[in-house]
Every structure is written in structure tokens, then in C-alpha cells.
Length: 439
Ligand SMILES: *Cc1c(COP(=O)(O)O)cnc(C)c1O
Image (cartoon, helix red, strand yellow):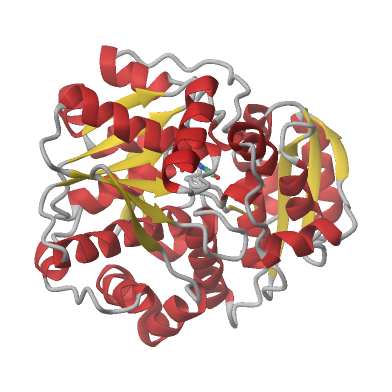
């Protein structure tokens, strides 16, 4: 596979270069030039196979040429954990993506990216500095995935006071090669600082910057794997008509699903479920994209006012609004609707779901009620473990979700963060001082 910048089709790179640089030098996102046809591979998947085996088959086909003989070990190092498909009833299934080390779906992308980078950097003598803006969950997944990987430094930027205590503990207690910068600003500010650093030529010439945000293809593409895995499981249950409902913020997760569709996955459509940060549902309805400042909600990992992967979604469809809005429907959930859904699922099914997943379940229910999806199954992606958002879940359900071991341990450790202003000059100075080369 070859990739080009969304802003300039002649800026082309291979997978290795796309992974190691993150963003294209013109500020665009790398995007596959051609979509492979994997339909027959999908139809031939063994539904009994563990996730990692299915992942290995697909990655071999997509990137076997980049990793060569290492392909299988890159995949096995990345995925010691798996998704689980759990029927919720009423035509809704939950694809649980929170069984990795940080208890959120971002573990899939981050862990594959770390594994891929380790393979690409091995023996080169190069050191990469990974910049990641996080509204909470990205940072903890990246911190866990890259902790103590050789030749890699990690700098996380998170909005001060806008992540939960547990998220903050997960971000700020890893240490070693992982540094957490506590930014006096919003997530959009963090994201802007990272984007500005990437296009700063002075910085780029003295620090090998790369990104682990969902703008990095090495994180984005492996997220397609669990859509493919879910398809194999559904097919074994004789379910031929299904949709994916994706709780969305920066739209990396949904974009990965759309890529799987473009490679031949026979999905009927997607539901983009957002909180009140609804610029994409708005675009799907009206054809006009109006980015705006983000609004704080109870599903804070989706508080994004200008999603960076929107550019990629448009690129897949050559900016054809009619085609995109035929495949993808938008549903918006208010905080009250998110809380009511958490409560309803807990009372009806005895199951705790986190606020982001609740936005998805709300989206699936609304879609079934309004669009008349026949007897199709809606697979809703469960993006985080409910214990990650314990305050919100507790308030909505009147009961406390059990805390997984990994999260309990993070709460016990000492916080270390570096406070920084939301200004690119301050950020640049920090990077040059700590990671600048002397040659
Ligand atoms: C990041 C995140 C999302 C949004 O995913 P995108 O790929 O940014 O759209 C949803 N839920 C949770 C729990 C997240 O951490």
C-alpha cells in the first residue's frame, strides 16, 4: 500500500514513512492512494479463530511488504488482548473494545503503532519523539503502549482540569520515557500545539517528531481489524444485515470502519454517534461543515469541535456529500440522553456502560426507531470500560461499576505532570530543550 497527503496527491510515502512521520509535511493527513479489494479474504475468515490470528491474516495482506518476516511477531506483540461481541438484545450487540491495558478501544491502535514503530526503528540508531494531544483516553493508551519501548520518547499534552481523576492518574503516573504536559487550555488547544509543532521546520530539523494521535495511520488502520473480526462472528451467527454504531469524537474509529467497508466489508451502513459536539452529524444532514469550539460533556473523550479525521472521511468519498451521507447517518445525544441510556441499560440488563458507549447505544436505538432498519443488527462499539468514568456512571445508575485491576493500580501511584501555557512558543522551547539534537 502507498499513501499520499490529503492536501497534495503527489506527496507519496510507504507505510514505514507514514508511521514514522505521522503528519505529512504540508500539514495534510496520509491516506491510502488505492483501496485493496479484500472481499474474498473477509468471506474466508475463520470465525473460530482468536482475534490475533484474524488480525495477522489481514495485516499480512495489507502490510506484509513493509514488515517482511517480522509481520507475524509485530501483530502478536501488539494484541495480547481481544475484543468481545456481546448481544445486548433488541437487535443491538455491543463490541467490547476495552479489554486492553488502558481499558479503552484506543489500546488497539496505540499498541499496534508501538509494535510497528519498534520494528521500524530497530537497528536504525534513530530516536523518535511522539507527540500526542489527548482528551484523556488517547494519552493513557499511548503511555501504556509505548512505555519502555526502545528508542522512543513520549510527550502527552492534556487539558488541565478537563479529564477525570482516573484518566489523569493514568496519564501522569507511567514515567520513564513518558512525560505528561498539563496544558492550561482545552483539548483543541492541545491538538493545535501538536499540529503547529509538526509544521515548524526548525523543530523538525532537530527533533524526529512523530504522532500517535489517530492522525497517524499506524494507529488508525489497525482499528479496522475489529470491524472485520466482528463481521466474521456475525456471519457465523447467520446475521447478514448489520450496521456499526460508533461513538465518535475525532472520527478515527469511524474512519477505520469506513476503510474496512471500502476494502469490501459487506456492512449496510454506519451510525456516527456524537454528544452535542455535532459538527459531523450536522454536515451529514446539511452538507455544510462548520467547525466550532468544543463543548464540555459527560462523554469528554468525544468533546471535539473540529475532528481531524473529517478530512480523511471526505478523501475516501472525494468529498461527495451524497455518497458519504448515504453510508453514514449521524445521531446526537445530549448529556441527559446519555445518562438516561446508562440508567436504562443498567436497570434492564444489569450491565454498566460508560457514557461514550451510552451515546452509541442511544444512537443505535434512535436509528432503529427512526430509520426502520428492518431486522438488521446494530453493533455498537463499546469504547471504554465503565469504571474509567466512574463518577458519571455512578450518578446515572446509582451503583458503582467494578474497578479492573489495571485501573486500581493507577490510582495508587504518584502524579507527575509539567504545567505549560497553551502557546506554541512555550511548547516549542520545551521540546528543543529536552529533545533537541546537538548536531
Ligand atoms: C477517543 C474516544 C472516543 C472517540 O473516538 P474517535 O476515534 O476520536 O472518534 C470515544 N469513546 C472513547 C471512550 C474514547 O476514548
